[in-house]
Length: 159
Image (cartoon, rainbow, N blue to C red):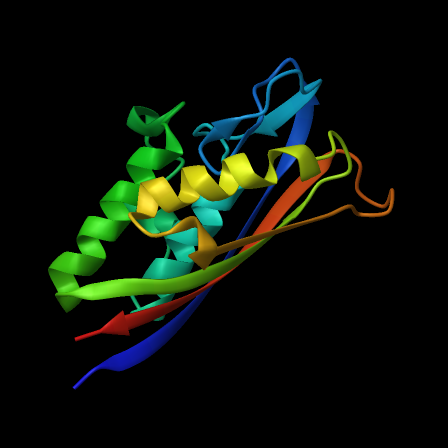
C-alpha cells in the first residue's frame, strides 16, 4: 500500500562580502555577498536535506555532517543531498518525491531572474520534473540584510 510523508526543513546563514552565494546548487554570479558556513552554505539544499530526513524521523544533517568535523569544511551541498537521498532509500526502500515547495528569504541580490535555473537545477538533483519544484523568493523588508534563510516542505510517496 502506498503511503505519503511530509517533511519540513529550514536553514539560515549570515552573509559576508567576498564569499560565494550558492542557492539550490547554483552559484549566483555577481553577488556581492555569500554565506558564512562550514560547508558551501547552500541554505536551500540544507533545508531540503533536513526536510527529507524529517519526513522519516531520521534526524537532521548536523548528525551526519557535523560542523565540528574538519573533513566537511567547504563541502559541496550536493554531496549532502545525495547522501541524504541514499540514506533515506536505504532505510525506507522505494519512495518518490511528489513535489517540493521552497522559500528563500534574501534582501540582495534579487533572485527572481534565477528562479527557472534554480528549479531546473533542483529537479535535476532530485531526478524529478521541474514542474514539481516550487521556488518562492522573499525579502526581509530590510530587517535582516546580512542574512539568508530557506524553508522547504516536501511531499513523498512510499511503496
